[in-house]
Length: 83
Image (tube, rainbow, N blue to C red; front, side, top):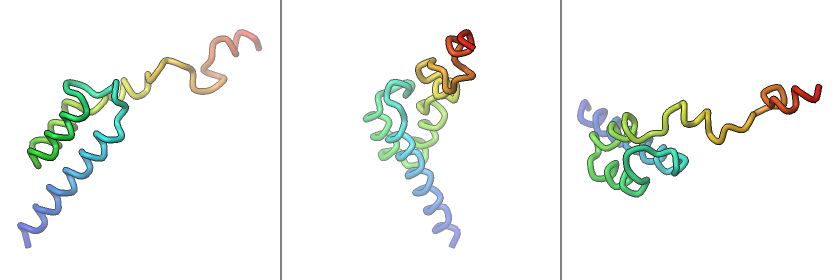
């Protein structure tokens, strides 16, 4: 029973990391290109996903600063100047 739980956890962790790598914005991925991260995640079932989550995944800072455009009108300085 314990082996099954560990196997399911490893597979779930791998699937989570693989899907995360597929959905990540390609220019924001760190260290290696996406195709190489996908290969590492598949080739090394425990180390690969952990490496992706710690080294390759875009940082929260990179996600929020996406292209430095304001999100709403109250964040747009030009809009606020015209009020």
